[in-house]
Length: 456
Image (cartoon, rainbow, N blue to C red; front, side, top):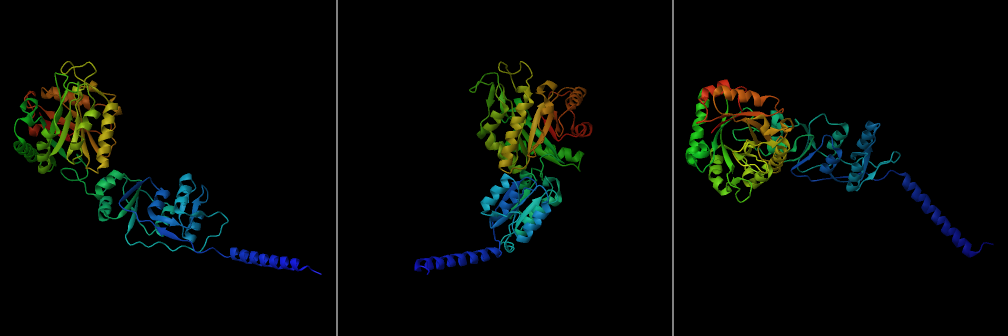
């Protein structure tokens, strides 16, 4: 005879067993369909070439599952992700972190995915621009993420087709993989340099008047007022165009901004600052007239980077570049006119890095970055000078004065063993040269033809 309590236990056990069997049968069925939720990117995102994590963040907000790419047999993993309609990510710490952000389970090797997710559909187009052939994994992400793929140059300013593609989609969300973020941004925003184009000096020759607006003692720029200076530099451009009608000439002002002085001054560095407000009338007029401005620093015992920062408000303007004059860079006990100064490449590089970062931050057109030199000792360790900032056009400006023979001798000497990638500048001294080359002589005799020709 079975006790009634035992009959109850048996009934309960049967129910539990039946529930377990039903659950097991349900677990044998395929999971629900996989799912994807699109992200809503805006503006420009920049990442390294074939960065799958960046692509996933750009395209997706959530995913039910992901497949990780093993070091071996990547094609099989991509095929598995394609069948499931889910993202594929690198089998790295960054890839696993991205899976966690998506709220996705990582499909194990033996795990059965659900039905394929539907590719996302977007109200606004998004684009991924690549500099090389896209990988199979990236092609898959673009396909399920409803993204356009296009090919561009690493620096699209050098390639007309790339620039045209970027300009056509200037308002759409864009992820670039492998390209210069700065170059892409200035092209999309159409931030062209004075005289047209994406570069400050490429295919152009800047014709500059040098001096200080206070008066004629420091150069021809101070020999007349603001409007007359604009008229004079335009006339200089017309003279060169008559000699070389097929060349492109751009007017410029090189303004002595900090002036080496006989006294220590309030900063104790033998360098007098010109107030920004005193420079603005000339800078404003130059901008209105399409004239490049180059701020020239004579730092005394101060440093070039520190002085450059004092004029950040002017250097944030699209038409304003920078010049460093090591002749007036003094040692800790030096005084102006006691000896010719010098600067080490490391200080130049700190200055150029700051200026490049400022230009990049504000998506400004490429800036002119000038290094004055007429003695080899003026720039120490010159081979180490960086010329690879895409935001800057670096020019070594040869400032020799005297007879044409002496000037050409200095030109040949300074040009020897120069850093790769620099441009060249030539200076004509109106009073000191014996005699000064005229326009035709300057254009026909100075080789290579300078990208910057200055009159002092």
